[in-house]
Image (cartoon, rainbow, N blue to C red; front, side):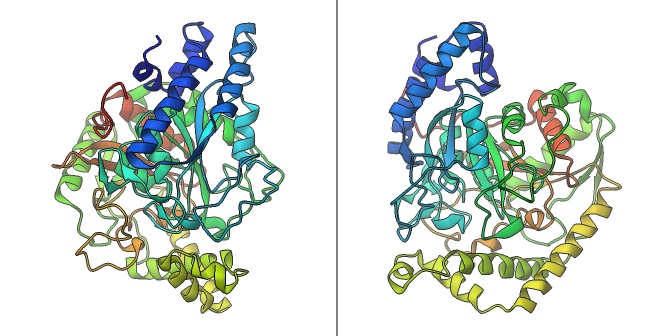
Length: 480
């Protein structure tokens, strides 16, 4: 088991089993993943930096613990990457911005990163993000654009695009992303990986996001089983986040037991376009419909029905108030020189956000609360909601909206993701096929607040039944 490609193809679940059996060393895995990360960087620009010395040090310590039969935790020796929005001790967190100084001290881990470190994870490096994670694609004034693993000339999506590309191409089986309007689910759909936006507060966040309670931390992985494994580590309390939820009383991994049989009798609402009337690409609609048919074939009670959300224009306008005001808050203390360094699109929404009043903000909160109340009532009748994650597949890299679309902002092509940041519900994206160009298509699973187990269990069942999955990314040749 020394072939680089084989080692980088392991899931985290497979790695921990191999470590326990003495079949492979965390050091060999770390070396393979670091070499792979360098190749991934050349191919699609997914990394801000990789930390070879630190990762190999982590791996050697993990190998010694496994040899003693005393692993530090369920992720001991497993390579993990971290989106460069989250603090990682010893390294600058620039958030994709030339306006942020790299001067320290960088002496603190974000809560999820701290839990990874405590569990013995091997921290490989930081992944790319647009500036302050402000949009649904990944390009920034500092790091440039991140390409798609299925076509490097297309976008990886965002804002956790570097994490999605890294996982898809074998530069570590796990990554930490953030999601304020779809930022783990959009790139997961475009890159053919799994991502979960947990219920708000389930994974502690510090420092608090300027985007407030829209912002979630979530796992980006190769499958739902690995996401459950990662959630068992990161969904633990941290005193720095006063809004964090109390911990779960049982393991997310244990909730997966039962496989496809767990879908039997589940009340599933299938909504082709959330009732918004937006056009969905033909290949996307067909792939999601096939997946829904398979879900019904596995014993779920499927009903085609749209949830009673407020109109899309009203939701989008409210989200813009919350999002743009948050962006304005991020940059409030910047001087003229710093503002000149910002992504022009970010500068535009900051200027718009600064013009909103407190009453505008509270009116947007009212829309949000109404959406949450309506979805809470909806889930009294339905256990799961299934939608496309995205109405489109990956478009050209380096632009905010598809060419010729007539759109101006990323929220116009992401109508199925940000509503569930507003309602704080758990939502996952899993791959369910490819379009005519071989680009991945995502299926979204949504459940009631606090029903994260339900989403993971259903997603795992779909992986086990062969409903979820896409071909291997073609961007990098085998063995690279």
